[in-house]
Length: 87
Image 1 (cartoon, rainbow, N blue to C red):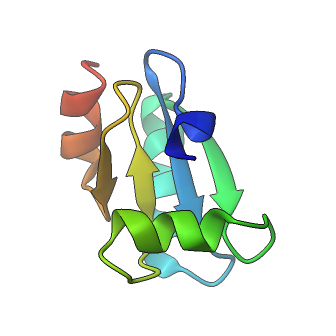
Image 2: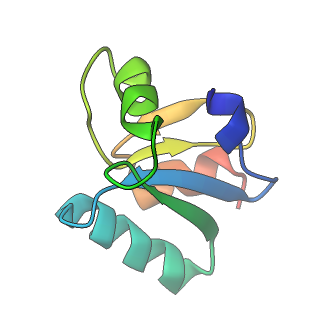
């Protein structure tokens, strides 16, 4: 299912919730750097909470990010995102 959310080159898919402070921080950092992302709220999109659990050993930890190569990271720093998308 994660392949359905694999972003295009230079962007990320970020799974989040409306109340997640770490998600808000990462979004503001991405916006400031001009890095494109698609945000998916796991409380609103059916099946995505289960996908996040699968990527995080059973935990619904956000932000969980999927990179263009199909790999994922949990609560990555801006530097980690930039490194993984080669910005």
